Structure formats: C-alpha cells, structure tokens
Length: 358
Ligand SMILES: Nc1ncnc2c1ncn2[C@@H]1O[C@H](COP(=O)(O)OP(=O)(O)OP(=O)(O)O)[C@@H](O)[C@H]1O
Image 1 (cartoon, rainbow, N blue to C red):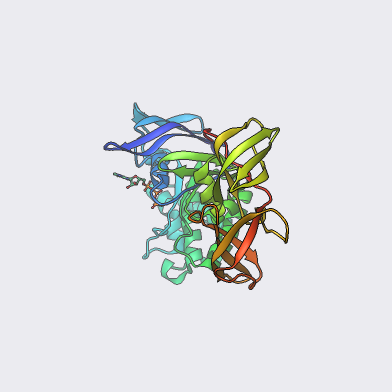
Image 2: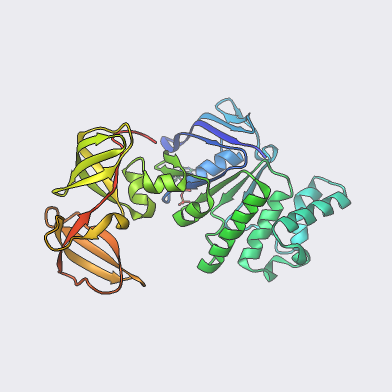
C-alpha cells in the first residue's frame, strides 16, 4: 500500500478552475472520504489521481513518487490505482471469476498463479462460493463486491471509490457500509472514497476532505467537522448546522461570550480566537432548548412543524429577524402548532473561526 499526496493541485478547464489549489496528505492505510455538493470537483479530483486528467498546476505523489505535475503525467495503467465505480462496469458475458481475473489474463500471468490470486481476491470480499455465477444473477451488493475484487486482484497501491453505493437501496447501503469498513480494517488498504452522502463519509472515513467550489473547505476527522467547522460552508453543510450572525464580546482559552439575536450565549471557540464585531456561530439541535417561564431566550413564532417519525422538524422565525428561519428537531410528536409563540434558548454552539482557512 502507499500514501497519496496532493500538493497545491489545480485543474482548469478553459478559464474555469474545477479544482483549485488543493493540498491533501493521505497516510498509508488511511481511509479518506472526499465529500461535497454536486459540482464541487470531487470527480475531477478522482480523475486526476487515477491519471485520466493531468494537473494544470501543482503535483500528485503516490507512495512518494511524483505521478503528475506540470511537466508530465504517469499514465493510468502504470499508477497501480484501483477504481471501484458506481455502476460496477462488469462484463455481463463473463463469470465472476473471469471478471475478476481479466486483467491477469491480459497481463499473461501464469494460469495457476492467476487462479490463486482470483481466489484470494474473492475470499477478501467474501464471494468465494459465487465464482461461476454471471453478474446478471447477483444482487447489487454482490456486484459491487465483484468490482472490488477485480480491483484488488491487481494489488493496487491505493483504491479509489467513486460513489460506490449511489445505486443501492437504503438497506443494502447500510450493510455495504459495514462491509467496506470491515474490508478496510482487514486489509489496511489506502482508500480515497468519493461521495456526496455525509452519513456514509462519517461512518467510514478516518478523515473527510470537504470540497466547496473546487477548493478544500476543511480536512478533518468526522467529529472535528461536526463539532468545529472551519467556516460557514462546512457548518451549514454538515448535519444541516444553523449558522447565525453573532458579535463576539469576549473570547479566551476556547470559550467565548457572544451576542446572538439579542441573547448573550457562551459558546466554544478556537483557543486563538478573539473578540470581533462581525462573526457567526454554528448551532445544532442539541444546542437549543425551549425557554421556560421567566427564562431568557429568543422570542419568535413557529412557522412550520412536520412530524418526522420520533421527532418534529420545527421551523422557528425569531421576532428580531423573521427571515432567518431556524430549523431544529424536537423530540416527541406534539407540542408545536403553526403560529405558536415560544422562546428558544441557545445554550451552546461553536464560534466559526474568523477569516481563517482550514
Ligand atoms: N471536462 C470538463 N470540461 C469542462 N468543465 C468540466 C469538465 N469536467 C468537469 N467540469 C466542471 O468542473 C466542475 C466540477 O465537476 P466534477 O464532476 O468534478 O464535480 P462533482 O463534485 O464530482 O459533481 P457530482 O457530485 O455532480 O458528480 C463542474 O462545474 C463541472 O461542470
């Protein structure tokens, strides 16, 4: 296995930067998810690593060796990068074993050795009993495992996953997620996993690279992304964080006092963050409480309450700024009528770092 380094990588199409100045170090054996909304540059990044595109600027290294820079590019077949695509791309007329062993046949690997490698790869993805089946007679999850075995048989130095679960139903996704996690644990393969599904990224990855308009918005562990988003994009994108404007009254040692919607609130912050007039905080459902009689809170009106199974999704318009609707989950299934007045208490939150990049 090998690590992967992207150093100030830019990819320009015409005058449009699809990937802009991205630097990421993926450790040997690490599981990195690349996450972001549609069009943020995820696929372009994967194509650059695989060698289907050349960088316009910057450098890509695999296992410490440069495979792409402005001066040249190592072709895809020489990079030892395995790819598992969303649509499996299996050959329908071949059996599972033939699909998995195809690259070995092309490379004229000795028959017995090829068989041994195919068996090994099938065992790794738990498909040993299905070697003679054709893809049409497999479930979606089994096809995805064949695709994984086919990429493993070539002993890749790293494996790229391109939205591999996008075509599967919700239940199968969950069980494939578990399988990918178990596979990574067992093999220690370096994985770069492209997805727009944040729960998938959170469940699987050691670290997540969040992309925004071609740029790296933040590179961090799932917990850090959730608890300490580096900017407003990450704050609102991850778990639908609520971003509210705030004035920082004081900040010291990771704790700040801010004024938000007329309320004074204690929030967490970076140890080096300081007072400033124009700031914003990120709050999530656990940071909110309904204020009791006589308690301070943000006055406002419920504009919508939708039952979501086990919880209500409540939209709340603060009286001080009615256009800034705050949506939160409230456990239970009654208690809020449209038009009801209530006071919302912000009990904690995160001060989004001012003007700093991830
Ligand atoms: N060959 C190309 N020529 C011109 N523009 C391109 C090309 N490939 C990608 N782009 C543009 O670069 C941007 C990033 O595209 P990319 O496919 O990498 O996004 P993505 O994050 O993978 O999106 P999705 O999740 O929808 O697949 C888009 O605006 C896209 O239109």
